[in-house]
Length: 97
Image 1 (cartoon, rainbow, N blue to C red):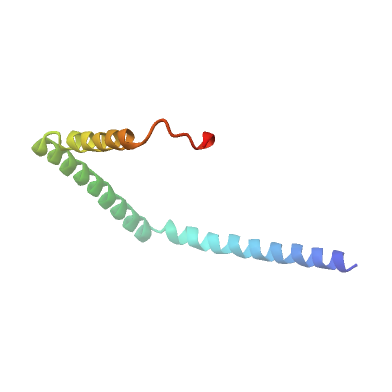
Image 2 (cartoon, rainbow, N blue to C red):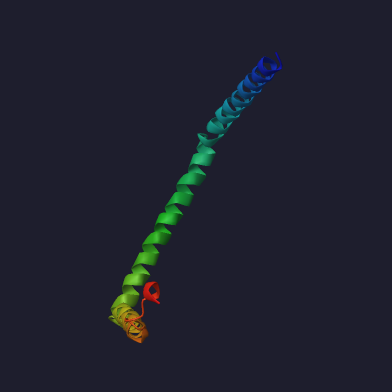
């Protein structure tokens, strides 16, 4: 009997909870679809896209001005890895000690 009562109470609370969420989402949807909010979202999206474009322009300009700085830094990193690899004793195997 107690199991049936707790199951019913859980089902009732779940129904109430999800009904509340659906009703609140309906109001939020109406608010988001209003022309004022749509205008703000459009302007914010435009600013973000302009920002991405400017970022890309300045990165390309920086690469053209510095001509290959990215390659030098990557070669430096590879050189450091080679030096680290050479410093490790390749004959050491912890499984056979």
